[in-house]
Length: 601
Ligand code: B12
Ligand SMILES: C[S@@+](CC[C@H](N)C(=O)[O-])C[C@H]1O[C@@H](n2cnc3c(N)ncnc32)[C@H](O)[C@@H]1O
Ligand code: SF4
Image 1 (cartoon, rainbow, N blue to C red):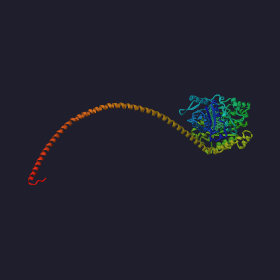
Image 2: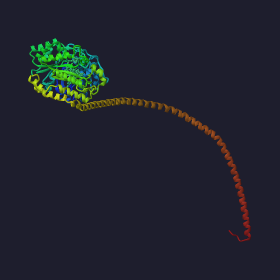
Image 3: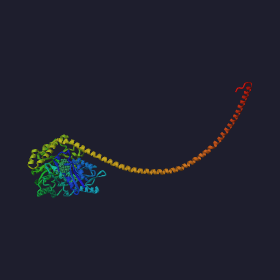
Image 4: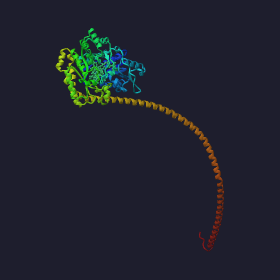
């Protein structure tokens, strides 16, 4: 099978890390590693936006994409484009957001959803699709069945993380020069653990990976480090808490030193783990640990408690961890949460705290109800704004301060706590950060310290959402058109069928009519003959009946006529007689006169 995996472009309205970090797409590289017998390509739209070109060039049988919550609109757009350009290609979506909130991808543009980890589920899905097998028996997927999303039972997480395939870094080699992380270029990512046993109420990680931590063996981890290219001087360990087992951390850093791995690296780790084993941290520092992202979250005890960070978490523990970092020359990336309910004085308190603690790099994220978290369940009715706002730099919950004031405080928070330019120069001089990434850091800082960038983006954001909605509408219309065409085709087929049936019926009917007609006409013929005979006999009878009175009348008339004629004859005779008498008389008279007078004619 030809499989194209697509990394969505970063959200345009996203502020913050987009400018500072564009790591390799480790998730998709790992997904690609799960199907070694197939022809796989990765398109990273952060570097190359030409999805249509990639589709037409590669002609994939299947296209997979991924996305964090803020990337949902882009991932949806990818699915729509694939459906439009390559309607026969199967579309599959995986990753964090869809696993927590599949309804955004419950659409005709998506064929399959992979919930959670890909290692076992994706190859099973691909093999089932290729062989035309039964999707209902593939655990951990969702698929369309009769126009609806059907979700199969979950698949238990992979037990042995050493079975996670090596990421297919070769598939993104052509993008490598476009990847960066903070001040460093040519940065690689390595995953060594999954999951987290803690239950912070704002965090989706423990929900996604199951609430337990699983580890790759130190040997596997170090083998991955050793395989990184010579010219890579910095790598990131992407685990949520690399320090989850300090004995294992010690073993890894020890192996690194034994194998001569001399690279700087970045981790995320909990403060209480550092406090538990400061010597382990010192060993990690010697092995190249450069920066630790620590979830300090709050500068006030009651707030920290409210986040449910765990029984060993406290501001005092955070303070100790900060000291351990300073003592070992490890840079701190301090992550703090900003509550949308904050007022000016809450921001001021945080500024004062981080200045006092000399924290080099700061991350202030606005408390965001990510799908899958307890916070989401508690506040979902209050959420405003689209998914693209879930970048931790826009408040999706109503702020107590008016938005302008709130974002002014956000910008001020960064302005007041960010490292000065001269401090940065000093770090460069000490070799802690390279000079070439300075420009990127400055660009990001310029953005986060300007209140307008939080608000200005609202217009872009609106435009983007309108465009996304238009795209959705367009594809709904296209779907509708396709549906209508389908219905039309079906209807005309049915109509044809009905017409054929009707024609047959009519023909049958005509036959029946002819038969009936023939039967009737022969019956009528017979009846007519009978009728004619009846009429004739009636005529004869009538004639008969008419004849006798007529004959009587005739003789009466004849008789009467005879009498009249006789009378007339007699009258005529008598008239003749009278006339001849009178004539005789006249003649006699005339003759008498003539004998006395001369005759006149
Ligand atoms: C490391 C990391 C970072 C680093 C990246 C550094 C680096 N070099 O990689 C930095 C600091 C830059 C970062 C930034 C941000 N991050 Co981040 N990050 C992580 C972290 C810790 C690890 C990600 C990782 O690479 N995992 C390793 C890979 C292999 O695992 P995976 O991504 O889970 O992929 C597997 C499965 O999900 C699945 N899968 C994934 N995609 C697909 C696709 C298909 C088709 C299939 C079949 C399967 C599949 O298969 C994979 C293998 O099993 C995660 C938390 C976590 N543990 O996942 C947060 C996390 C992903 N980040 C998160 C966030 C929110 C952000 C930011 C928005 C925060 C911010 N303040 O700006 C930014 C966004 C950056 C951006 N997009 O522009 C959230 C996302 C939550 C969400 N629902 O949106 C997470 C989950 C942490 C959290 N809960 O807060 N991040
Ligand atoms: C992986 S954690 C930090 C490292 C480590 N796991 C810990 O707890 O100390 C990443 C950080 O991102 C921030 N973060 C995570 N989820 C968040 C959310 N829903 N809203 C805002 N910020 C969040 C928090 O500051 C959190 O500490
Ligand atoms: S914030 Fe850190 S410790 Fe808390 S659940 Fe998330 S990953 Fe675990």
